[in-house]
Amino acid sequence: MDLKLKTELFASGKEITISGSKSESNRLLTLQQLYPSLKIENLSDSDDTHHLQDALASSSDVADIGHAGTAMRFLTAFFATQEGVTKVLQGSERMHNRPIEILVNALRDLGADIEYVEKEGYPPLKITGKKLTQSKVSINGNVSSQYISALMLIAPSLQNGLEIELVGKITSVPYINMTLQLLHQLEIEAEFEGQFIKVKSKSIVKEQTIVVESDWSSASYFYSIIALSEVGSSVKLSAYKKDSLQGDSCLAKIYQHFGVSTFFEENSIRLTKENKHDSTVLIQDLKSAPDIAQTIAVTCFGLGISCDLSGLHTLKIKETDRLEALREELTKLGAIISVTNESLHLKASEEIKENIQIATYNDHRMAMAFAPLALKVPIEILEAEVVTKSYRSFWKDMAIVGIKSEEIK
Image 1: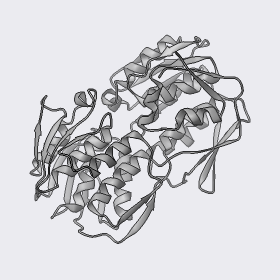
Image 2: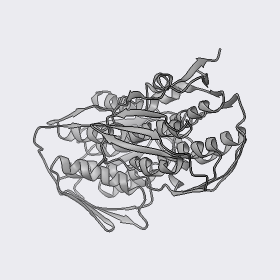
Image 3: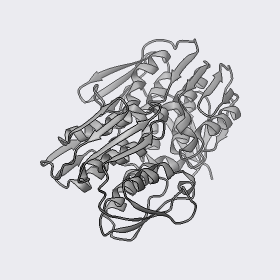
Image 4: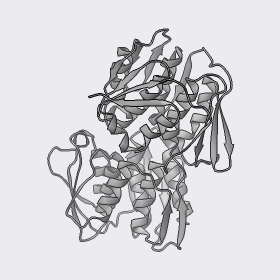
């Protein structure tokens, strides 16, 4: 489905309800399998979460998780601990080209039985569950935090708990802390000090319900919309907390550069364009929140300001090479942009070309990050249905704030 987007009038003051955080939901669903007394409310409605739920509920010996990278990492660790269960874990073609060797090696060091079905170092995987008795493991600290979180999530179910040594520089700390805080909510003893994460074994947790906070990365597109709107424009989003576990909540601070203020109200946030944007170059290290890099880059381009974004090395192995994809698509629109293996550099430009077709590369964030530009010029989004990976009602919610979409036949 290809869509043509345009905006006749931005609808200020609307209220949007966004489903639960994908990151929190997928962690809690994995923990729920280990501790069935846990109840979860406001789960993410993303494809990734649905794939994870389906795989956990299925009795089939094959689990297909599509494009869901989080599910691949968490399920690899989970199934490795399930004694007597053999599971082939597979996904989309792109998923079979996303490396998983670092996690597999760590799990093998713990005693796991995991085989590569096709290409060494990549899914699909054949996992034969067994009792893991080793209690110490080392893993590089600058890898995807999902590898580290996958180990943390199974740690309390291991007979002797787990001590994880993070070797070298540690990135994506907020996501590690998110996993840690969720363990704490289940009264599981866990700590993260220096280069070590220590999680103690726990066989039973008391019955409780955890309400998942709405997804901050999904909120980023509304931050971009308000930034690209006139002064005085606003939108209300629910349900959000000031003391969020999500690293992407740094949006509130970053978007002050664009004149956007965040007001925390009861169980919600109100975004308001209070001032004109700052025209100076935006310099941000996003190693703790790489998923919002695309949104920020497009916002800067739409406002005609420069940005230097760093800490983006994990974007090379996402649904697509997001740095190259951004360079390609922003260049089509008239941007002057360069990228390295871990950074993006955009120069200020005065023109945005109209009616450009934006390729999405099977990447939900490419489609959603570029949509706010419809406030400036008509734009076309190819394979727009890809948004369901993380945000199923995205195009409906865009229409509520005035960004209308029409299918291109």
